[in-house]
Length: 247
Image (cartoon, rainbow, N blue to C red; front, top):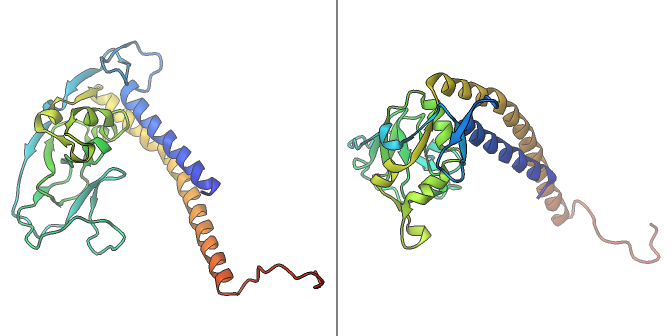
């Protein structure tokens, strides 16, 4: 691992920690706090509420739109457009008839119920279709951007782990009742938007640093591969000089 890769990991960890902190603690360090009743979250602002997801989601299942783009839900990025032509991605089998796939509209909450405990869920920025095994929900939360940032933060993944059930980890499944029962910490609407603005402004600086580091990493990897290739093909001589040869 290059030093830049480790540094990039540290920046990413800092980013995730900052998001989890502000969506559960707010921006005012002097505000009065109360116990959230959630062990790994602890104190939250006194005037914030804790509600269940059932108050903000409504399950929908619209099918018959097989012509729409395929979407997927990943742990790293949430809802993404699926590149069915890519040979690098590990895709599940895609049937010829996609009419049974569920329609997803922009702003809906989509959950891979078998992998939600890993963080495979998110609010969609796209319109398309997903596997019928996914949950698709209308979202009534007032500030969807805040909901998206909060629910995908590391503060909430333990809830999805807690409410997923199964004999083995690879068979864990999140039930509808379990999903509806997950707690969600709700600030007043004006604070929701303030937190979104803060995250977008501050974390853009971290993203910029991470992008610069990634460019360095890509260059170093390319240089390493080119160097190996040159050695293998004999363009660079690495043989040690024999004794008596001129140094």
